[in-house]
Image (cartoon, rainbow over all chains, first blue to last red; front, side, top):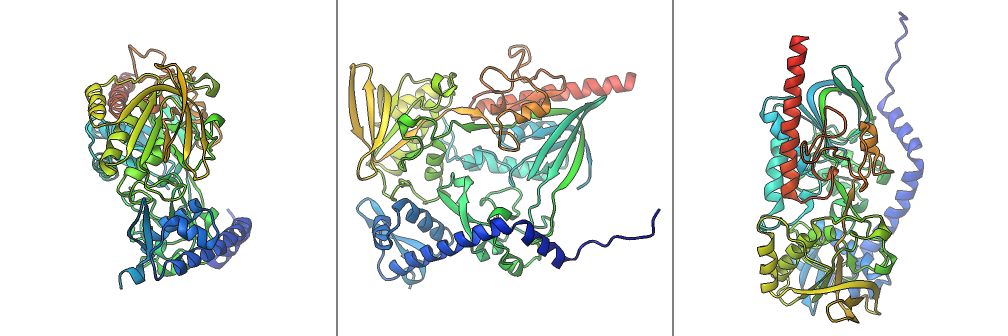
Length: 101
Length: 439
């Protein structure tokens, strides 16, 4: 038996290794994250004062309506956006802060 | 993770796997239930209601999930991958890997503070990609166990979750942990997948936003669904005309799915009835070749749907295209009238069929059967050599099959076969124990 003990890597070293191992996915996700942030800000800005439908938001920010719906659904799930009535066959969405004020 | 010695290893934590595990555990046997996802519940926990009773799915599934998690004789192993199975003299030896959650499950309380802090939003497979969750999250509101899991592929390693977690449970240093299970019997309960939405280019090849699969519609109808109401995913419009295309992924030689998937008629009828309740003004049309209502109370259920105003039209849909307003336009041959017509709808649901679940590595539908050394039937589901005499016995002694791992079936039949497989496994274990005593 050898007396030499191998010490477990420290948390800092493990995190460094993790960053190296996942460098590609971290970089890809950071690009995705920046795009998501822009989209979410654009949506929230447009529906701050007046509730809007998904096609109205899509036309305003120049993005496909299915993408806008996905973002609106995610913002609604986390309480940032709420439904604020209907306009014809389309639900209206507004930023929660202003809708509840 | 410690190695385990159990009487039965159940592979798959859907309704069939859970029922089989509970039946055996209630008889006093030690059971290990291995599930590759972070939560048990399978497909059933994603559904809105069941046919023909229209009971809430969650109300049936959640107590079973909870019972599995709290049963003293069940070792619940979620987020684990089965790597290999070897036969030993006394049973089987399974090699399993616990995938890293990057969250200490013993510390995590399921409070979701990490999820609220996480800045990255990703499509949620629980909502068929139509809803979203965060890179770190509790998979869904009734997940068992209520523990967060971090998706490293979509993490920017910003550390916000770690800072916000009141229990100090986030652990970026976790690694995959291999462990082993010795077992006398195995029950395969690996479930099913739908025929891919993009399988038929005649039906838009998955590119038409307002042509959806039936599990998407289940999520629209569920109170916890992505929109909280029935909306079409193309632009968020509340649909006023909806069509179902039956046999869109079954009974089709061109797809290699020649069999009837058995549940499509009934789930279409059920969803049509639920839509009638959610959207009373909507016109609902079901295009069918023939309606198969084989189970107890199913024919009456179908007649009820007709009485509620759901329109059933015998016809074969040849093609689906989109008009300028994202409305699906279907071209259908009305077989009783002998003519072809085009009709425009707000939303179309393809009644897709059942195919075997993909393997643990996601590359092949047969990897579980390959790991278990089980032959497949012509339909690619696990073969049952003597379905009349031993309806759940596989070709290998000691390995039993349940639920949709053996072929398309509904929830009622999945539960029946689960109890049947548990009973067969129980008899096998007792016989095995007797042999060990007299040896």
